[in-house]
Length: 344
Image (tube, rainbow, N blue to C red; front, top):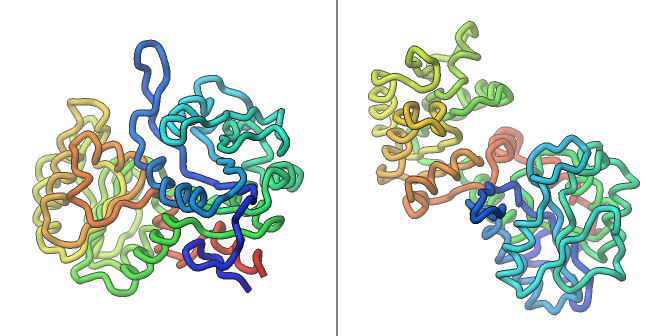
């Protein structure tokens, strides 16, 4: 069996057409009337793998990804046109390919398929959609750690049809998070925030694994009637419910100062509003200034790190939020399991 890790496989990539699933669900902004990429951490994370494949002499590289939740239909503002333009600046040109015009013969050297979630077959893991995508390549590389906790066609369907490998960044995610799961220095403090209710599914695991779990954002409102482990510290919110209050900020800071390892996933409030930024920004800066091993992950977390220019303060930033939590909890992801045995 050939290794499913790109870094040590003996697979011959020369002249092959390679499909690469990437994390491209990034922030866009309008500049001079045009949508462009704003925060590009996830796109840059794919570059080592793309350069590796280019150096191996592949015939074609075709990227697969999505932005947002278009619910299986075309939404113009969620087109991947800005992503194609970003990659064109890196590789000279990047052809954006409409979903209704998928043909291996029409692909150039470097391609990006339009937002996969415009087709309901992506999120529905439809076999016909997987076959259509797989027909564009000879081999598949999963570099989309950030949504490999989703059983979608481009994540779990394609590996059943093509020789498949984990990308270099994906490997780094697995290696780093696996090591931390087993050997993180103690006390281990996890700061969990945001507004997504599915984060509640991780609280019991985090209470078992960590020494302290600090909860902010909208989550305190969602867990207020739930019996919780004594390791869990729930933030008290300001009157409008959009931020943690001064007392909780200070209590969280004190707990953070006692840690030897820190994980951070999600804001402490509605940081997009200037009047509700204090909790998120104070906790972010406190974590960043700590001299211990620091890990962060998730889209909102990336935005905050960018706003405060804290990238160099973290030892590791995961491209995923939910995927990071899922991997820590289950030691695997659907996207990893789909690759097992696919290249036997």
